[in-house]
Image 1: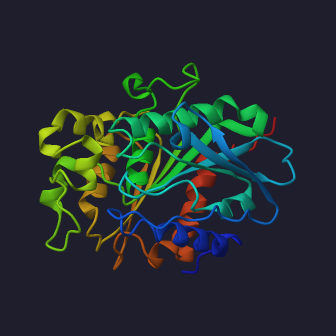
Image 2: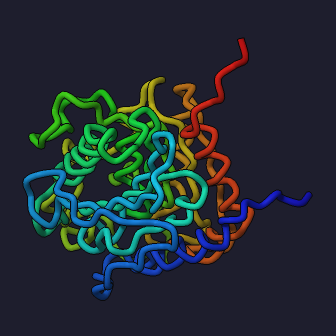
Length: 316
């Protein structure tokens, strides 16, 4: 059966795969990248400060060069890199600008700067900032989605399940504004990290129970010695029927984050009657070209349009 393809999928494929090149080696710090060029027909508001923690609390907001005649739904990209590397300067998905979305890309404090829950507190502060300034930037505050890969996948999953969890809001500004999101695209993010070692195969890139792994660095020591904190980092722990809808994509050869991590998240969401779709990318690991096929990109388009594009008013 042929798939009707959106005209922007080629552009999105390029930006997605560039962004994923740094995700595939999560434990290593990717080389520094220059800020990406602004797509034709777009403009960028760079280094907007959404919180008090310096570079770790800045974001870039990409908007159409010609202001839209209506508030735009927003997609926020959250980078991966094992919570210890990466930055807002290599955003995926800027092709979304071509089909009526604004796109933001955020920094958050890395694990060498602050331990968990600083990372989710920063992500929530960024959502609150963008919602609080929606009128200024012509954004639709009621239609905000998040998209992340690897460590970023973990953080977007938490955003999707903790909209009403005050203990993870942190002390950042705009505390009277909601951090709830309306759609989540999670690419191969970890969930129940206490189980990662037992789920890993013999080709695992790192021992998730080790203090020197990205997981250990996130929690400040071996995860099995920080079980209570690990539960507070598990999006499954917070799932209710009010969680955002999810689109989860994961390679079946992933030796960084086991596929089982996404399976248990998908199962838990469905058990709570939350919309969730798990797409298993056959033959792919921790990222790769299989994620950027026209068919898979169209799934992203359809998912975002369903949940972030306001429905047309019914005729009277």
